[in-house]
Amino acid sequence: MLRPKLPDIPTLPTSNTISPQHSHTPAPSAGRSLTPYVGAVAAVVVVGVVLTALLAAVAVTAVSVAIAAVVLRSLINGANKR
Image (cartoon, rainbow, N blue to C red; front, top):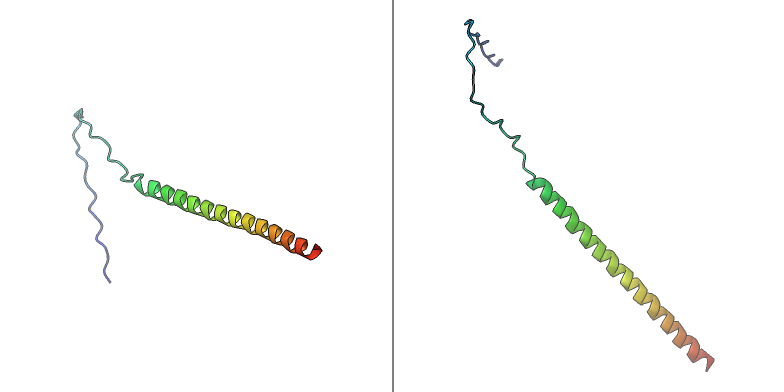
């Protein structure tokens, strides 16, 4: 079978003098940006707005149907009493 080759263990220098290093490189960023999260939040907000608009449309329709039913009932009862 194929086996991965393990890297050789590096040997450390055996020098007793320590050379100071004054140049520091900045740490690399994690590589994650907030763009996907912003897109997800925007999608959730859009879906919430659409669902709220649909709920409002259903509520307005239900109120208008109820008012129409009351008016028709009143007209029918008024015609029967005459």
